[in-house]
Image (cartoon, rainbow, N blue to C red; front, side, top):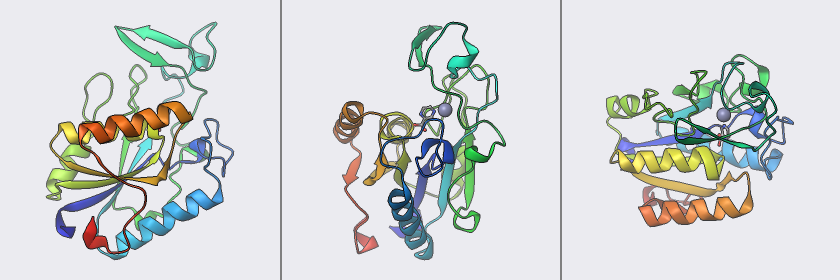
Length: 213
Ligand code: VGL
Ligand code: ZN
């Protein structure tokens, strides 16, 4: 049902792409990838679906940056209050050029920023690791949405966390897998399996007929 479905473009930002030589560039995110994402968003927007984009939006002193933990290296995993925190290169720093969303602003109805608290990461577009809501659930509910069409970066981190939280909140979740890319192949595959088992409907690509969503 079109009037209850929204598009959720997850973290389509310069720092996650090879196209923009991002600091956390995910494999397979060159021009062809971005062109495919933009074409899909344009098609859905034209058909009348609201488009919401999540934006990783970290302060410089963010807990997920390895540079903020003395002696740490990229991809080290810290135990923070019983949660495991992967350490990344600094990325998506608030107001930096490569934190920008790579979709024309005219295509995006609403941006939901996440990971804004220095002490908490937020792979999920719905809640940060401290349990604080980002406003995404409220935004979807205000619009009367019951189904989200999700794609973006990265399959094994923010896309997975967002899709799983979406399910947990009672939304129907459709994932367009050709428009997702993973940080690593193994965890990307495992993420697709985990999401599928949990009840995410995985479509390789957007159906020709949008009524089939
Ligand atoms: C992401 C790692 C760190 C993502 C965000 O968008 O998947 N991954 N921050
Ligand atoms: Zn991040």
